[in-house]
Length: 289
Image (cartoon, rainbow, N blue to C red; front, side, top):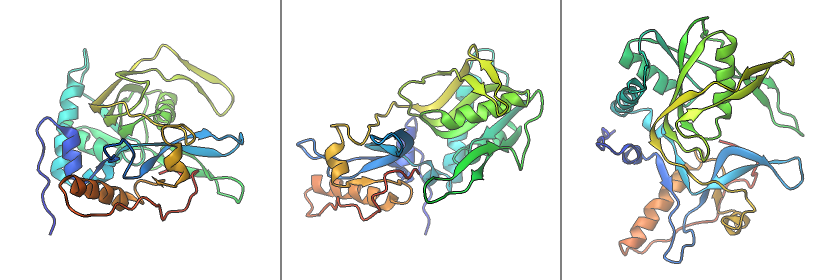
């Protein structure tokens, strides 16, 4: 039987933990990992100059686990709404919340219900199919819903890191002659973007450049927690990567991550358990999540 999640007052990460949605790699007393690393969606070009490899790290917030729990979503939406309302000179009237695919959909809808305004969503559309030598390519589009000229839009995401999806979505909104009022998210884990996002410039399909260097968009998050990520050959993670002690797709391997944390907790309490660190997943380090 499903259990109702108890909200942890003032501790949003703890609330997510109670949803089984937060992973921190357990480590032994010697500092070595007794659980797996996790692969991130962000990628970099590998040593061969062609292959894109995932960054890896010790921490992962899986907002998917919060989505089935309406009381949790309403709590997060209410708290985000309060923080949004505190922005200097910010007006809540006539806002439109836009969910980024797909983690921002439920958050955008929850915020829209909270303020009794509209909600829309963007979607990823495949532009080039996957081939034996290349991955599929996709771009953000508004197909089900539209941005209208003059809209005052708040972009909603679950987790913000490199802001690549955000950048593309903001560009589409600006092209529609609408205004981006803010970016809201559950967790801002970026190492470089704090409370303000400057999107720089947007290169359009016709080759023209839309200048937005002076645009500063407020970033409102429930949790601001910079989280380190490493290239796979970084000394901080190279040994674990070589042993394939990595869950490359967190959402696919989530049960393994949760089991590692539980086993580590049992070890600390003195129970006799074995932590399995050898991954049974394919060693394809190019795949994102």
